[in-house]
Length: 294
Length: 283
Ligand SMILES: Nc1ncnc2c1ncn2[C@@H]1O[C@H](COP(=O)(O)OP(=O)(O)O)[C@@H](O)[C@H]1O
Ligand SMILES: [Mg+2]
Ligand SMILES: [Zn+2]
Image (cartoon, rainbow over all chains, first blue to last red; front, side, top):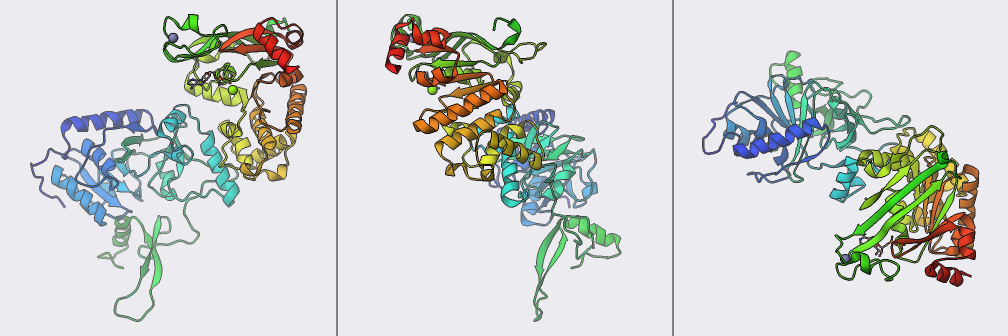
């Protein structure tokens, strides 16, 4: 899977000074878990909003010895993942993998891989929206002061209102959490299914937002608690009896697809399968399938 | 009242200036010059060298014309603006508590102190309430910031506070925009009382209300003061309101305290010319 590293660009595309600057902000982010640290987001040969925040983090921390995995919506083969991976391999020459176990750096949008990550691995998340307080305080400067004072009363009223109006907490994604008992953090872009997997994780998670020019981090073994009430608990998307139609897994995050056999008159139907495609393939191989099948 | 152990708030040299100031500020601002703004450098001396002590269970009135610095003083004590100079000492009304200087607190401690120990009611309900949230949500904010995490118990407490402030508890989930001005002041009072604060700040809470509504809100405040022995700072431009509730009064003009003492004495025998004017026009 290795592509040739061409010497037209600096290793990792951005120059060493910029990388050092990003790493400095990342150290700050790790020291203050969940705290948003501004950084000088650069222009990259892909549009902002397509993962430039995560990309700059990966470019700043990657070494020639790393093995990279890039996923988008859980899939290594989505167009966006392929593009980002191509850019990273062309500018670094590092080897890539689809196997979560084999990767040292995993850049992702939307998902945390199903297989539990280890201490020696780093997860880099591309973040579209940074601040959970944007729901209750659109003014960035005032929101920053609120974070500084842990002034989260209004955000809790928002949660209260959600329960009162809908009978339950109605937040599908971008679920807010409290990190290390202190800072409120947005879990954009991961589903609720993955939120609890940040809690006391073995691995380091780094979040980067290119458009909003912020980075933040959840270091290993750090508490991540979703906002919830004693009588209205945080819930994941898990549904009783859920099952991947390919590998049969009942304990993964599933996505729905509409399938219809080409050239037949059969009406199509909906199926669900693991959102983490490479994990699903791995399960199927373990079950004796020689090639991933539909 | 002379018992040193019974004071709650002690303010000294409290000053708030908007602008950098210039050498001619002192000789051109204040009550003798009829303005708190310096004509040379435009600096506003909103509150200058204010000092007073507030005792447990006492209502202290602050009276003065518009722009005299009353709200500035309230905001300083509510820790929503930083003073240019001065100290604000607070003490829990228990025998063995130690006083703390609120001015030197860091932002985090200040935020949680304000939530827990202070309650404020503003003239304009939009300043104290979030009109996008329900009535109950607004009353719940301080409880939520104080880590109340059980919706059922939070709603019990909101209901209790609504009854206490004479609001219909069945309207707990209503939109505050459907409430009258007098009711919104009650919602603000319910919110302010939710944490059982040690000090209640009331800034022109009845200004802008019809006289009959105003009288009922003042009755409520009087009842709370009586039942809970609540310590209060009551700001009004209306001496009539002050007279009804405050035992002692401070008179402010152009950023300065020009007179202070027992309300009855001030009404009977005002010393400062401005106070004399105020009293004669109020009668
Ligand atoms: N943020 C500010 N910037 C500049 N001047 C201010 C500010 N806030 C208040 N002032 C000025 O301070 C003075 C006192 O205002 P305020 O305390 O609101 O008076 P009061 O409540 O007695 O009507 C006024 O002249 C007002 O214009
Ligand atoms: Mg005012
Ligand atoms: Zn001046």
